[in-house]
Image (tube, rainbow, N blue to C red):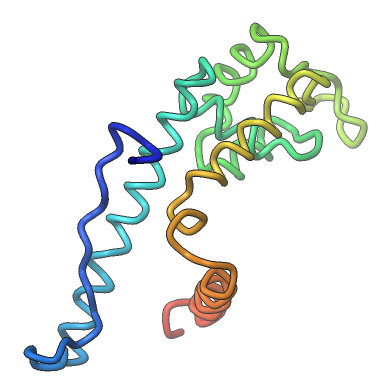
Length: 164
């Protein structure tokens, strides 16, 4: 029985040679890798959006909850989310309406406001994170050793800064 009804499996591009096929060239392998990354990101993004809806949020609110592991200024949250700080006002309004966060003056700069999760917000963030991690592709398809290997490979690629 399918654990996640309605979730379509991602296309599988197997880079491992099979007995009756020619091994992939470096160019073919690199092409399949570059084709697969966007698929994986899209799969994870769609999963996050579905879970956010299940929790009664939009995707931006859910992402903000996940990023608020400590009080952050609206500017800092915008940077973490990769969006304009002006958009954070809308997110902060929504989180406040749901009773999940509040704004308070920043201790470092009284002109700035911090967004701080309420105890309810922390509980919802923790539940949201647990749900995401039980359904994330690397959690459902890979064992612990494979996830450790994947993390090491991803960190290696990030450290390389794209070959620079």
